[in-house]
Every structure is written in structure tokens, then in C-alpha cells.
Length: 328
Image (tube, rainbow, N blue to C red; front, side, top):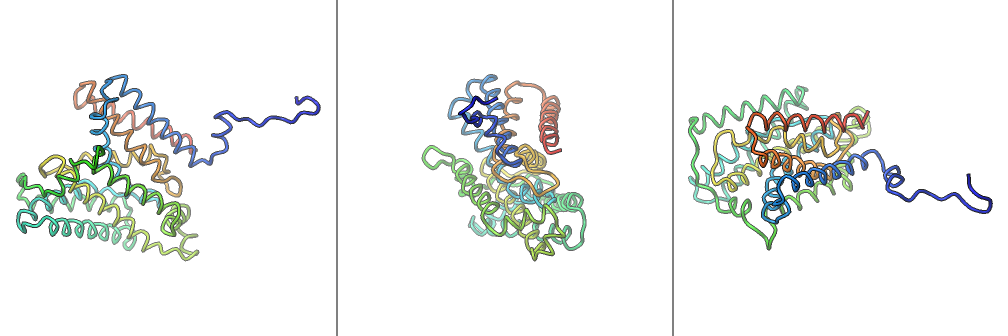
């Protein structure tokens, strides 16, 4: 009860601040709190995570997941998903090395690789938007198609190690003390956040994710937006293929297989609703860093590969259920 002549005080602690935030902002805040918690666990397991050398390694590895998560975030926001990423990555890495060796000019190889990414995105649009096949089924089928193309192209033999210099420089080089690849991620991430928050493209994405029928009646070009999203997703995967070839100094069959679920997990941990319409890329950044740190912790603990996959999967399921519970 308030004493006479005095006014009630408004809460000023962290709880009232959080209460004033919208659901999307609270989920994003939670994703960064989880990131801090996981980083604290990483430091507790191995104090070297405080050192710049180890942090730099994690930032570069998070860049690969984070760039793929751009396309996945956009796709999930409209209620779709892209599972053609693994072999888009692999085929792009293989083509970049082989075409650079054939043409002797890396930029021609890069242009062809990005054109392949655009073609994969348009193929996914054909199935998902024009033929109305569920994106999970269609993009997974496209992934198998790309796998077959890669096997035929290489005769199922390990490709060459002729890595274009630009790919190696981007993946392993520095700009000052910062990894070049990480700076690329910062730029792409900033553009993605800006596109979602301040551009008609972003408003169209949220409109489609909330109600495709209402978006269509409102004049949203659903086909054009869907096509652009799948093209962005495939070109991001193709670009990551270039980076991975430079990072590992080789391109080999199946090198993209480890990038099927981690980017999707990053999007979920980042607070984007799987049914679409809510979320954003700012949370996916925290999700990508969290996924990489979890993987690094499990490697540091020196447990077997099978046990590592089991624990990693259980942790991701727990985090996913946490966000699903908060949305219910």
C-alpha cells in the first residue's frame, strides 16, 4: 500500500525491463543468455577459450554456419526450409577447385559456382512454389540430385587440391587482427538484419510467414519473395563451399554433410519460430556461435564420435524444446 502523498514506484530491475520486451525480443535475449552460459562452460572446461587464438578459430567456424543460417532464417520465417545445403556446398567446392585448374582464372570459377547456386535456388523455387511440393521433401530430393551430379562429375574420386588463392585468403586470412571470413559474415549479417527490419523484402517475409493468404490479398509478390529467399540460401551455401575449400585446402566428397542440421539448430536457438512469421537473424548469430561452442566443448572433452553426436543432439533437442515451450 502506498503512503499518503507518495506515488507508487515503477519497477526498475531487470525483470520489469524484460517484461516490457515483446515475445521476439525476449527470445532473442534468451538466445544470447544461452550463448554466454555456453561460453562460460567452454572456459570452465578449457581456459584457452579465453585466448584470442582459440576464439578466432571458433569465430571462423561459426562464420560457415552463420552464413548458411542467413538463407535458413529467411526460409523458416516464411514457413519453409532448405535441406539442399550439404551438397550445394560440396558441389560448389569441387567445381571451384576443378574449374580454377581448368581455366587458370579463379574468378571465372567463382562466377560459375555462384551461378550454380542461383540455379539451385531457382530449382527449389520451382518445386516449392510452382509445383507446390513441401520444401522438406523437395529440397532434400534436390540435395540427393546434387550428390549424384557430384559423384558423376568426379567419378566418385577425391577431387584435386588446386585451391584458388582468393578462397584461401578469405578463409584463412586476416584484416588487421580479425579473420577475413568473420568480417564477411559481419557485413552479410548486418545486411540481413537491415533487410528484415527496414526493407519491403523483410516486411513481405513476415507477412508470408504469418498468413500467406492475407499476404497474397495484400499484394505481396509471394513467388518473387520465395524465389529470392531460396536463391539467397543456395548462393550462401555455394559461397560457404568456396570458403571451406580454402579453409581445409581441399575439396572432397561429402564435405558439406556436417552443415545440414547445425544452421537450422542455430536458427531455432536464435528464437525463430519454425512455423514462420516470428524471429530474425540477430538471434541466429547467437545460435551459430552457440552451436560451434557446443561442438568445441564436446571435442575438448575427448569423448568418442558416437557419444559426441548423441550428447550434441540431446543438447540441441533440449534447447529446441525450451524455445518451443516458451512459444506455446
